[in-house]
Amino acid sequence: MSVPILTFFNNKGGVGKTSLIYHLAWMYAGLRKRVVAVDIDPQANLTAAFFDEDQIESIWNEQSSESTIYHCVRPLTGIGDIKEPRLQKITTDLYLIPGDVDLSGYEDALSNQWPHSMGDNNLYRPMRILSSFWQVMQMAARKVEADIILVDIGPNLGAINRSVLIATDYVVIPLGADLFSLQGLKNLGPTLNLWQKAWQKRLDNWTDSPEADNYKTFRLPQGKMKPIGYLCQQHGVRLSRPVKAYDKWVNRIPAVYREFIEKEDVDPTMKLEDDPYCLATIKHYRSLVPMAQEHRKPIFKLLSADGAIGSHANAVKDAKVDFKTLAIKIAAKTGMPV
Image 1 (cartoon, rainbow, N blue to C red):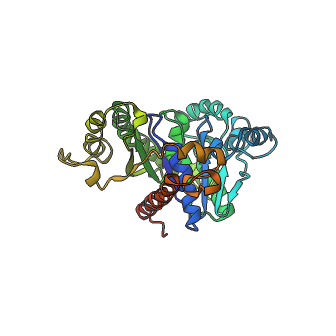
Image 2: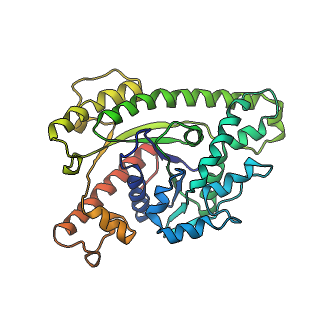
Image 3: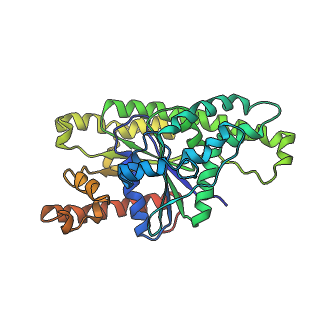
């Protein structure tokens, strides 16, 4: 039985996606759920949230090991096979498969194998490559008996993200209250639908092929990629825009989400605060963010010794409640008991 994979994705960047995954990973670990966080963004921002540059350089330079997601799949670009990942233990119940800037070089291999996976024969290699991220993530989850896998990917609709999404069971969509996030939402729904159907054709093609009988233990992801809701950034002074502009865009999110993601009838009167698809409105936490980054810990773990005193201490308590509430809500939608 595979471990559920939850991917946070929007093809529009700058919506706080990596920070969300980082904080939720810590929160689930605090709730005694074993988490494997996976950085499949070639920019490796999630890895940078956990480690400083010296630590990351050390991990990347271990070329002979399986220390990053790219090191695990790189043999497939030649004549080799997937390598089992070597996980980085962050804390009790929290593990990381680090990202790698060299991962962008894997994009061509994934693009080339996509059409080959619909051929009449020699299908094993293409299907192995296209499902390689899923294979690595499940290896990691089995190794530590994980309850959930949280995945960070870049803001694009390229071959790497397609392979991650076909490996994904559940999708959460972070949004900003702006035109670009809404446009990204409109692009995302049809793309997920297209990829899901295309992967199902490949699964059927594999099942019907004589080759499948020779690889009876070869398992493949089902490509569910079920959206379970969206998150919206709260208005803040740092946006340098009036509240009126924020309201203009945020009030359009529920209708756009229903039309393009859920394929439901649109209710033009639905407000964000009443929308069951809205998982949370994420606060900015302002000066707590650089403080947390400096100490390499989530906002809700900041202490007075870290500088979280006075109003900051109250904000830390609020952040803990906010992320715990969000973690429990997402767990309920994915069927994970907390």
